[in-house]
Length: 258
Image 1 (spheres, rainbow, N blue to C red):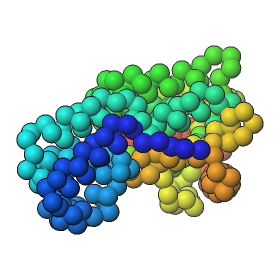
Image 2 (image 1 turned 180 degrees about the horizontal axis):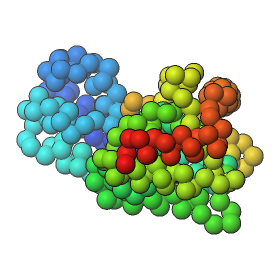
Image 3 (image 1 turned 180 degrees about the vertical axis):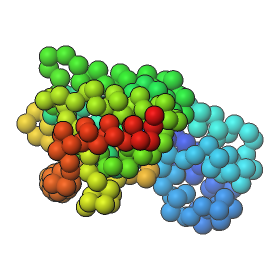
Image 4 (image 1 turned 45 degrees about the vertical axis):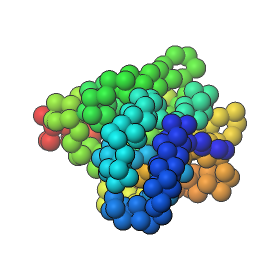
């Protein structure tokens, strides 16, 4: 399954390449000027990397461009919610009948309380609204099942301050039901040291969303699905039971976030 980059991201990358070539610079020369790797610049120019604002400003300055030549495109990119690369997953998510989720560092997006999401997203109200809208799939008679596994560290990583953490973890406990389970894997027992991922059952098949340092990847490749499914089952082998997990979360709230 394809995972096309944002059209605006492609335009931004093409503009960087065009200005670089017009200035007679190689990728290596421009990369040296902005103190990023040549591979980073190559990924930027091909629309495979979503850069930070400061990085775009550095490229603009290194190329001797007037203010806004690249930043105007970047601002359009920031208004794109959700990012272009995430949209294929949203389509799969809406059609899914079941989810298996693993998160090592933060509460899964489908279970984030509004204040937690707001703190995590830096107060971007458009992004917060989009995240809360996603969660609507968990409501109603046709809601999918969600089997969620989180690393213990999710409970200890402070997002937005103690009151926000307390509200979020209490919200997690309140959502537990036969349809929606949340289990904790002790940090010392977790066999997986990679990023988070979601497996969705759609039309009898499976699709996955995998987080990377640069962007999320949507895949239905059989080998990918097999690896992720085995990984999820392996992690779950080491989790606390549902009741133990609820008790553990409640204990963390009382001892750390009250």
